[in-house]
Image (tube, rainbow, N blue to C red; front, side):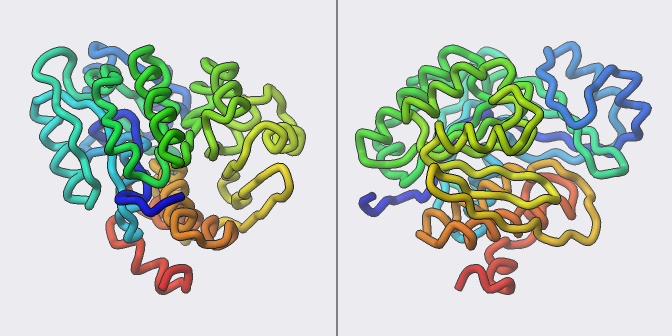
Length: 333
């Protein structure tokens, strides 16, 4: 690939995260699936918000978290995602730019409010997400600017935004532009329930070469190939994908191609505080290494380092510069 202005341009849901601690019985009373992500309407959002304890608000969204993580590692990241011109939309734009991410998507003057994700964190650190997508669902092909996509070495697409047809068209347009400029396209499968909804379409994106690099965790991989056998699913993925990264929580992570599998252990963590953003930050670390042309094992270790740091704190945005940690670990100079 030729030189680029951005290492990664992430496209996804622009969401403001509201995080709060909760006991297990709160999830049960409100019929939440622990560890899952449920799409909710505005009425349900108000009900869940009322049930939450004191919380914190910060810009979020899976791909936006990844972009912020890349910036924290000294990379050049951009983000495309739709907000409304309201209070939370202002919060989102300010936060992501303050994180060092280029963000120029125009805010909508009317329509649904800015999206928010209500995240309940149980004492074991597991996060359960209830997401009102609002304005984020209204990303369209008009929000994709060729020059911006062409300027990025990798365009990173968030599987969560595959639901609305206009956003799907925007994704496919971005992929075409990226490939036309000799760039690469990455896709994160986002969630096992998301894979359940779009298994056939995701497989087609991978098999047709629309996507060059796939990110998934063990649950998403098993869902993709409808099997409980991890090894069988991995073999199938190696047959379909050009390149893929598979995370397995405490079992570590692997970079796979048809010809090889490179694996590293999980980064040691003193205490799991909140798993929100673990996959997003793993992708950030890996991409920060990948776009620097580091070897796969080092890129995976950067991912593990970033994920390990984020699950030791509340929230999905690093509270200290990840590049400092990477340098201390000898992974970046």
